[in-house]
Length: 115
Length: 112
Image: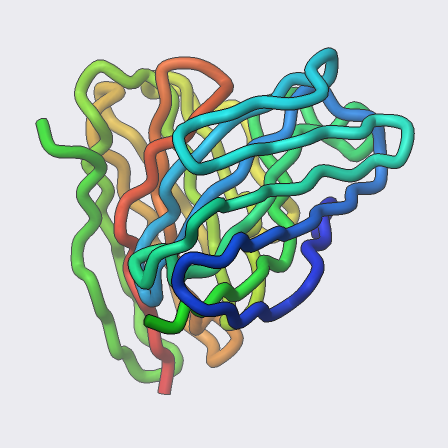
């Protein structure tokens, strides 16, 4: 079962604009990760944020985590056509059956950046 | 070592046939995972190896599915008596610890 859910399902923006994607999850977590997937390819790890962190940056990426609301957001600034991809959040889970060796992925946000 | 390698990239098979996929992880990674992804969905966990030991299996991994990782190196995932519902992308990932998987490009299975 999916632990996370991304919002919106699809997002289309112009090159240079910022893109914000949100992820909501159901149970307590130790950490949350964001991945990117280009069409028909594997996933690429972008960033990990731990439950005791509120914000993290990596290049043009900014991730926030609000454990009280069980939600996270991924902001991509100054988007480029090459950012066109699907973006997934993934969490471990302290509630669902899990020994910490698997991650639960959301359903993804499909981002299109128009040149 | 250029990453996680999966073969074949695509596989079309007739219902009822057996198929086997291979994953070569990053050599220094002792953790290996198999996930399945259907269209429009996120990956779902199938199984996890630490070295050669298969430590976790999802309920998604029915009796028709078997995975191995002999000598803790490459891994194979076999599906016996394939069904149309098995059509999906099968993703392999490896990692040194619990965080930050490196995924392969996947094997896309189509059962006709």
